[in-house]
Image (tube, rainbow, N blue to C red):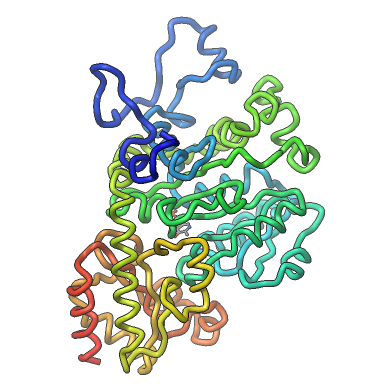
Amino acid sequence: MNNYTIDTRCVQGGYTPGNGEPRQIPIIQSTTFKYATSEEMGKLFDLEESGYFYTRLQNPTNDMVAAKICELEGGTAAMLTSSGQAANFFAIFNIASCGDHVIACSTIYGGTYNLFHVTMKKMGIDFTFVDPDCTEEELNAAFRPETKAVFGETIANPALTVLDIEKFAKAAHAHGVPLIVDNTFATPVNCRPFEWGCDIVTHSTTKYMDGHGAGVGGCIVDSGKFDWLAHADKFSGLTTPDDSYHGVTYAEKFGLGGAFITKCTAQLMRDFGSIQSPQNAFILNLGLESLHVRMPRHCENGLAVATFLKSHPKIRFVTYPSLKGDPYYELAQKYMPNGTCGVVSFGFNGGRTAAEAFMKHLKLAAIETHVADARTCCLHPASATHRQMNDKELEAAGISSDLVRMSCGLENSADLIADISQALQKI
Ligand SMILES: *Cc1c(COP(=O)(O)O)cnc(C)c1O
């Protein structure tokens, strides 16, 4: 499928039925798979042959959908996970363990920040958080001998900062470690981080990929470009024998293209079991079939709403990376010339009270913690996701108390603007 455009890969990637086979991806709703002899099954357990034996590790439906996302990103191997959280946890934990260190952008999604800063810290992995706009010198200074990866988001949720992927990839590679990019908000339709030097991509497929608020899920894709063997001492989990699989050395047996995902499946999925259900993978694939049609509309609506708000007298600020004058406009043009996403953040001259009143008067945009849905939704972080913080703490987190995050859906932009306009009139 790789010689087709991304549009065609969205529709037909990952699965090509043979004669008389189902046209739609079949849902293999089975925990287990039958074999004629124990010897055949033994070979699967030793990773001598590839095949399915238990859905906690791998399932054919999931693999077809992962193969499609792999084609969309231009990678060599991919796996689905039960959530975006699981994808980011696995992507890091596959190469970092107790005593190791990881560099991450300070503006990353709150759930990921918590995973890194609280939970993975308890596992003995230390994180340094750097400003996405830091200089190359500042970035290089964050590395330690035990650093194993660099992590950032193409477009940060909800800060909407744009990652300078080339800058981060250059620093990571100069220190012999991979760059991992969470590409959830941009999706491969708008940005393919591998083309800019990123090594591993993660997704919360819950967002635009599913796109209908129907199923929680995640995905990890490997570019196959990072040379684990050239840095064998740093990544011994990939470059030395794994006793739990009869001494297989992943980087040798599965090559640079397959080592990362095979190890992640064989060890982490086996032990943590955060697999996506085949039903959810099927629903995710329905979303992927129209991703290339939906993303431009999300971006068109986002830009229309941002442009309208920008000139409204009651609005204090608008953050939208595709809007001229936004601090990230140039980076967004470089990495995402066709558009960024449908999420717009803005604040009110009337402060927190105005923000809260505005939300109450909206009719089309529903109040939800979700983003990237076909239906427009919005959130006032200060009274919802970040309500434990006082105004001072909110400012420090880059979220003012009057900030509203709106995720523009697929409705007609004139209707969205009319709804926003009437709500603004009432405050
Ligand atoms: C939502 C989100 C996540 C977490 O994904 P879940 O599917 O909710 O677990 C991770 N990264 C980003 C950028 C997100 O927006």
